[in-house]
Amino acid sequence: VVPYTDMLFRKAAIEWLISTSQPIQAVDHPSFKNMINIAACATNSVVLLNCNAMRRDIMDLFKTPMTKLK
Image (cartoon, rainbow, N blue to C red; front, side, top):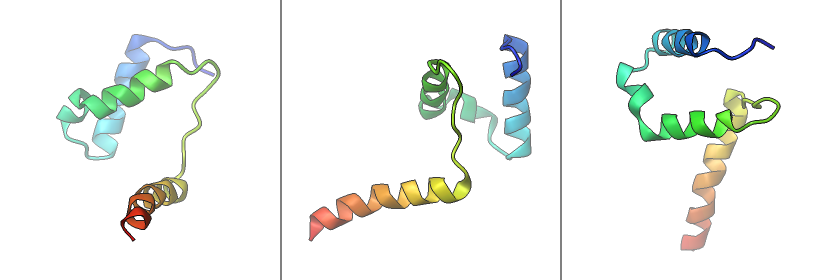
């Protein structure tokens, strides 16, 4: 585990912006800041979902309200 530093986080954020073609404004978005703030409270580590798990969670979020419409 690499110890946290502001410079290391800054470099990681820049790498993420560039490698995923995010607009630079993404780091100002409230949901991005919320995600980072939540992760910062982790006492051990953060479990990152892979794309399949994330897709399944998103689908489940939308299925729940749809079933309530019936």
